[in-house]
Image 1 (cartoon, one colour):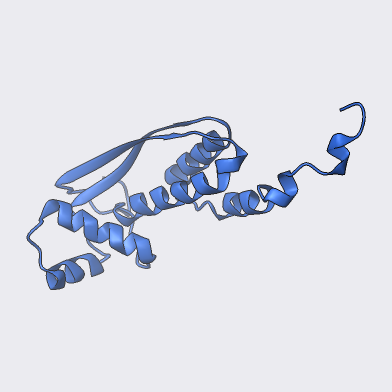
Image 2: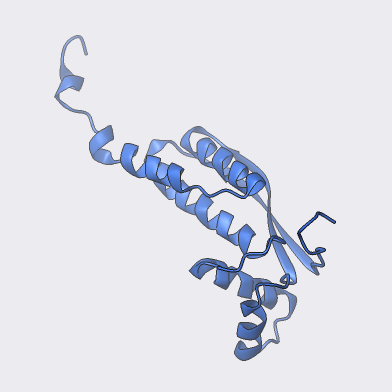
Amino acid sequence: MTAGFPQAEYTKEVRFAIVMYGGVSLAIYINGIAQELLRLVRATARQHTPDLSGTERIYRKVSYLLANECLTMAELDKASADTTSLPPTRFVVDILSGTSAGGINGIFLAKALANGQDMEELKNLWVTEGDIETLINDKRSIEKPL
């Protein structure tokens, strides 16, 4: 057992192998997917997460539903609201690969998962540098010798 973390007693584990293709044109889209995968894993991680975001709360409920499909909404809400106990199903990103900007998103996702970090700065980079006005050809692109 790792110091400070409760003993993992998951009844199920859902593992994902992720391939992130694409160049800069898909960078922002792929980053959004990487951000959600990070939230998915964090929603069921054994580290104590008292403040779950909107989608993290939903992923935690899915964890309980995968373990017991017969839960009523009231039981589901009560069980998933307790962030001090581990949910029954754990989500894990097991394999990551990618090319171009997808590979960069994959590297940052792996780093965030391994080190308990976020990926907000990468999102900000893609939004500012991946902006079509920044990428579009301008008058200089048609100057000689091109």
